[in-house]
Length: 565
Ligand code: ADP
Ligand code: MG
Image (tube, rainbow, N blue to C red; front, side, top):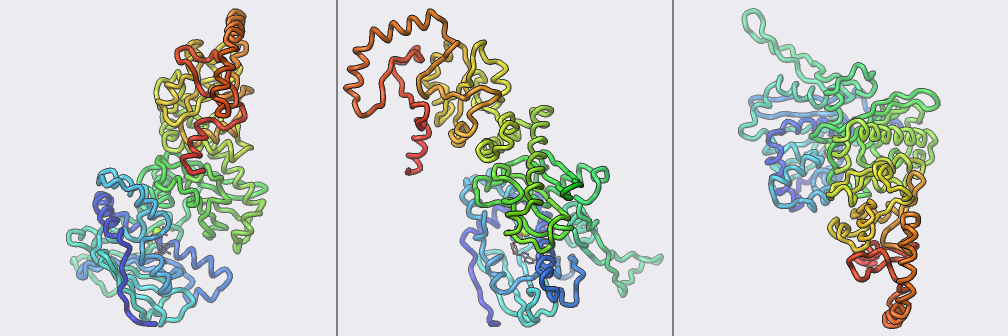
């Protein structure tokens, strides 16, 4: 139907736009990056769909993006001949803001403008960034494969609603016109626009064309009867270039483009692999955790290409969950172009690419931990909790992962996680054969636990584990370097060789003398406890609760209760 209707955005849209305008004020040029990246995605989608339906190209197979401006009308227009959208897709994709991730984003808002502004930097701003510089946005689009009368016109002032109507649109794809706000005239300038395009979108893998700037002749006259096109960007996929031809700045800009991040990445790894499986990977470690790091269903970040054709963005098959923060590109010649998700799931090629990519990332991290400890501690603060999921998920790399872990301990003296297991083992007491740890709900609770008394007395270091994930970590990581990880709050504390003969004798005597008391306490507590024992692990406190070696720890029990189980 061709009728025009006016629909409302979700209520949060005003808040979002407000925040965006405030927080991105010094960075507003990124609207162009976002719109160009959408246009490039649309071209990728068309290329992919056309693999099985050539007719989608109509008579126009030369995919490109055009950027134009009109000084008089004070508009900038970005046009693509990509996949386009039908009416319902327009409503679904840009008519609401209930897109995945947006909810999580709002959940994180604090109300403190300064803090929230920081947050938006980590959040892909996307299409709505147009409203940073525009007070009205007009979008015309037509989906590839539909006829001309199925065009769609969408318009909004970004306030609370948008209008949508069906129009005639002969050309396939999307055209977005920004009506600039008062004071944003700096963007009505060809050089400025070129600058921004080269800064953020140089390696978008299709041409971005603009009209050539008219050059005055000798008399200072401008002949605008002949308008020529010129390609503004390099239009090569950065990862296909050889490492020596890429500067650090280019790597960083490319990262910002693929990850939609404002900050530089912490590190990257670019590999061209030949041999059994042929592929190129360019993988980045971000410097800050994305806002949806804990949304385990939101697996995105690695773009898969086959022979330079974008196939899908999906990390599930390409990265284990505990590396879900990794961003980048994998491009292989060894998969068919019409590869489906199902094929990916059982593909040997994908398996081997994934295995090798994980190894690369872990070795990159190991190198960083060794050579740039400050950088690594920054990494650990952001992603340590996710890395701790690793030993339970990735058996093959358990050893490497264990070395990457960092903990607070009774020796480190602060809640900051800085001690590696190698550090710990390196300063173990003579005759100590276990790595001791305690799990608790907070650093303070761990540090002040009565279970630590005897360890303090003997000067034995204990790991203080207070992240939620730690319970699972110690379940999967039971040994390191041949030493068992032992909870100080579980079982019969046996300090083994760490006790001397005299102490042992004294303990036996105490146990004999208090047999009666133990019996009485047992009778009184009856069913409430499994056992009552004399303990030597306390020096100041009169009693403490312990769990059996194979029982749940008290901390895990508390967490499950809190989760309603
Ligand atoms: P994202 O790109 O992260 O999905 P955006 O806010 O940038 O988020 O875009 C929202 C959605 O709108 C896109 O996923 C896409 O479906 C649609 N879209 C935006 N621009 C275009 C375009 N030029 N051509 C086709 N679809 C588009
Ligand atoms: Mg986008």
